[in-house]
Image (tube, rainbow, N blue to C red; front, side, top):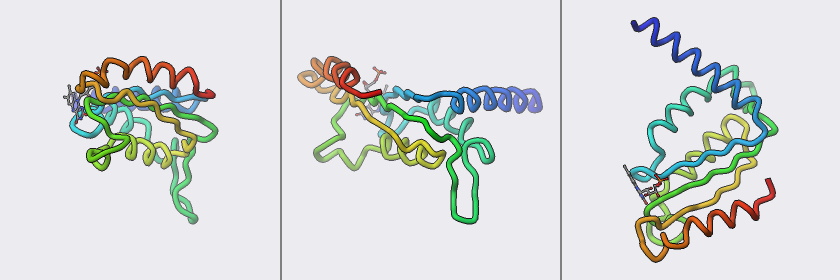
Amino acid sequence: MEAENLKASAYQSDQMTDELLEADLLVLATPMWNFGIPSALKAWIDLVVRPGRTFQYSDSGVLGLAKDKRALLILASGGVFTEGPWRSWDFVEPYLRQILGFIGIVDVQTVRIEGMNIPPLAATAVQKANKAVEELAL
Ligand SMILES: Cc1cc2nc3c(=O)[nH]c(=O)nc-3n(C[C@H](O)[C@H](O)[C@H](O)COP(=O)(O)O)c2cc1C
């Protein structure tokens, strides 16, 4: 059973890594859960951040192998994290930028859907985010 699980994970990892390496644009749309990313997104990261496939260590440090790609982060949250007292609680955007940079994806843009638990902000958050996406040069 364990061997079967390992085989299935290896297959999934190969498929997802191939898909990532073939893409020009990576779109990650995620909610904030407990100030970080949901475990399903973390699982995807763990399947695609692979030595020899998406990064490698060299004499001059880490080399990202997922080159010539852009990424768009669409980040939803109940609170506001781009400004104000909760800013330092955002472990979503800094982590995603860091891990994407580690594999060579440094052209990263972010669109926020924030304040979804704050009714006056929630009323316009999706509309604002749609407009921001339309205005991006992708
Ligand atoms: C399990 C869980 C944890 C959450 N944790 C946070 C949080 O730490 N900070 C926050 O601002 N919003 C938090 N939220 C609110 C979501 O980020 C927010 O509702 C977001 O709009 C959800 O996106 P979705 O509607 O696409 O699922 C949480 C929601 C859930 C269900």
